[in-house]
Length: 577
Image (cartoon, rainbow, N blue to C red; front, top):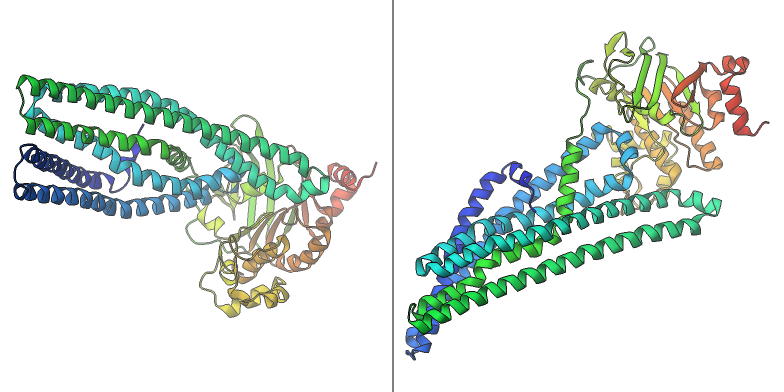
């Protein structure tokens, strides 16, 4: 019901000790509150003067105020810890995502990543804020109250001591049922997120194919499934709340019966009997508060488990085999891959026996049918995927490395995917992503080279216009130009990795963008994955891929003369029979 890993978070144990001490003091305040209230009631019962009631009522009010202040203090102590922890987790998740690369996003789904990195962390924050204090209160306050009740009358204390674990056992059983339902609900939430993101991305294509209405039924089925899973969790939560209220109320009633018999038999005075009766609901209160918040934080617990699972994923080691400084790629630099293999599941290779030798400022095109391995090869070249250990070798400028997830290598290239990510920031800040200290003049010149000048003139604040999520929308062509402006701004990176940058653009937009992209190729090593063959005429060398293998490579003229896989692929794409 509670994840012990929470107490392993930095600073949590020290805070837990402080919260436990405050819980002891709160328990004493509860006892004082019950005692002075009982003294006032007994005084009224014995028809004492009202003046004699004022002092115990003032002390009762003081104890009540102190109890409420302790709750505020505990929340004040917990909030900075929760803020710091959630911020650290968010940074760790983003750093982990950067290390895992786009292959992880493609494998797990964009919706899953967004759910974990954004909404998941928010749920973890709620989980920490609600659960930690409640758990410590449940572990401390009942014991303080129970010890005091035992001093007054051991029989009732023994009954309360015996019934408490039985109620907890029953709640654990319901808790496991709720956890199973919540797990399915969280999976359904992630699945719905994936479907939502995929639908948004593919909506133009679905409209062109006339499948948008048909796909709407799929979206409905996914959301309907999530609704049913949510209702199942709510049913369990209502059942457990009812059962807890029933058992605690019944237990208090049994204590009241015992005290009533004691009063009739004269074995207990009215004051201690009333104190015990007033304390009995507070004895169960921490358990009831924990149970009420437990169901509200199940998604937070699942999100915390998902974050821990992501952070525990292995990442490449030995990332400084080339040193820490970026590689200065020059006309005589070389990259050599021999017999390199990669597999996603350690069984079926996604890339097999990759042979590539790049020299100086080459333009290397990567073509193949959908699913042939073009994006996987780009991710391997970018160091986002780690090749199978012991299979083949990789050399940069003659120096062998175990993988390309080297800090020096990754600091030397630009990666331009199909959909460049735009941060919620100004246009200038987005362009200066790799060069955050660049001035507006340099950013403006980079934007001009990328063909953004006319568009920037239409923006209300020019380069200072906010774009990205929740701000001004940007078209696909404009997003690609912003990515190119990043490359123009930082001319120290001489390696470019393009992963089908024009795949989702119409022909007219692509033709305009091509005029901007081609000048970027000068004095760069370029790997350009595409399925549009008009780019091949701009390449010096071409890799033809099929089912994870490079089945043919050479200059466009050599491949044309060979009449092999390249010609067959070209004929298929242009519809030649």
